[in-house]
Image (cartoon, rainbow, N blue to C red; front, side, top):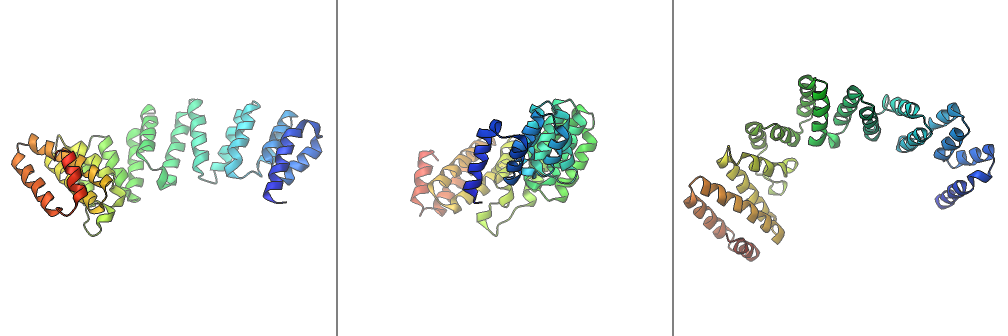
Length: 288
């Protein structure tokens, strides 16, 4: 059976479900692997154990739909148990997210925190500052943040996720540490990767912003590195971004009482790139 024919048959099953006897309906559903229809039909008939047995054939990418069907029929605990069994053998992040939400809804903060931690450490894509904050909030409610933080930071450091380490430092007000981590990644070999490497491309500007008050000179140097990068990348959009950084640099120099240094810097920059008319145009528009 080709894909179109199978999809059409599944559609007919849904439309004609009430006119087909149970055993014929279940047989057709199994042939098309329409386990959502099977589970729904069995639950309507009060055949919970059979529905749960059929659910074992469902792949992870569809199992949450089965869990929702169970919940709709008043079997929330069975739905949770079904997903719990899956995550015991598979760190599927969608399932972990679902369980975390269920635990939080039921007030099981310990379970929710464990799911959040597993999600964080399962995939580098899940190791984000948002997830970190989520874990922190749950752990603080349980008065376990100190121990949990040590565990999470050990994973972050072992995984060499420098950008996240920097974001965490900024989030916790550790500007000195953020600067140290950023500077440790300074590179000049490939401008296309950014002044501090491609992984730290966006976070570097966040460090510069955070450091303006306490470390204005370091902040200037970071902005300058990004100005050079944007100009090297060429294009009017990059020049416009570079101008925004230059405005910040000028403001910081003026705040430090170093207007002469700013004047020399911008004059040198103009001279070095005198053959870039679009850059000159953007500088003029920004009144630089």
